[in-house]
Image (cartoon, rainbow, N blue to C red; front, side, top):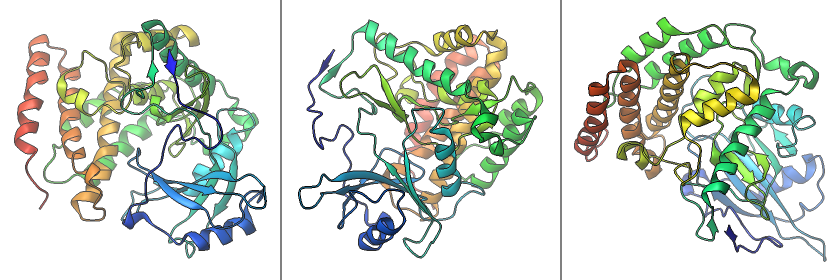
Amino acid sequence: MSDKTNTGGQTDLDPARSVRDEDSFDVEVVATWLRANADDPKGLEGTPEVQQFTGGVSNLTYLLRYAGRSGKPGRDVILRRPPAGSKAKNAHDMHREYDVQRLLKPVFDYVPSMVAFCDDESIIGSEFYVMERLNGRILRRNLPKDMVLSQEQARDLSRTYVDRLVDLHQVDVAAAGLDKFSRGTGYVGRQVAGWSDRYRKARTKNVGSFEKVMAWLEANQPEDRGSCFIHNDYRLDNLVLDPENPLKVIGILDWEMATVGDPLMDLGSALAYWIEAGDNPVFRAFRRQPSNVPGMLTRTEIVDYYATKTGQVITPEQWRFYEVFGLFRLAVIAQQVYYRYFHGQTTNPAYKQLRLAVIALEWRCHQLLTRDPLAQARALTVPVTRLARLGSSRPR
């Protein structure tokens, strides 16, 4: 494995970019507020340089870099805030996201330390919170050019990815005070109903209805398989890897949707992002993490490994529900973001193509529901043709 990046000092292993005009805020006002409200203001003197991370499509994430004064070292912190434009009900709750990590940190060491929470929307126009930066490797669509994994190392990394999820699912919810996020039994039913409602509200006229998929999920939902603390957006590109050992996880990010719920729903949602080298070109085009690297576990192998680690029995037919739900849920998330672009609430060009992802995900769900080899073969080709035709159209 080659990893030649210099990790000393302030070297960025996950570099940020200039702040988009529509996402900017008054840096001096934030700096003043932070000095007065941080749990530990050390290293927060002066006005920071601000950059923006561009990997996500939901909440906005910024790097605040303080240079330090009078020989004192500087400090990097991260600011998280909601996006501009209308928001789905209960989405982008900054206080909840802050509180989840604050309570989880003492019992699960893979969470960044919280610095401050601001509920005064006059500061930047919304609530926000600030946390310590974990400066490590974050794997985006492809491995960094200076990082090469053997097939054995890739396999180890994908096992570690599952191991950390298993660790999270074993946290004592009540002892940590995380039971405040529980709504009791019936988690699966609430999720099916809730995400179906969100899709119907966010649907635009240039995507499919998902009605057959939603009806199937409603009719085939199982009882909860347990209750534990779940991440709900667990991806390889939400892991922060040790700069000296990229096979070791030092942190997990993006706790926006974390809650108490069914562990298999968490795994199903996670594997919706897990694109394999053998998947059809449509899904490979939307890959956001290097899960296609030779040696990585397949989705089936991950399910088997998770079942072995947790002592569960998960048959292929049982797993089909969680896989379809995960893909449907991912489509809703993409459509909610695309809805903002469609209605001119954001001009971020990265959001334009999310409509095509929604269309492709509906085809994928239908492919899984039929279990007909001929229908599956047709489903591999239809999205390519349809997406090519739709790709040049513009929202009206």
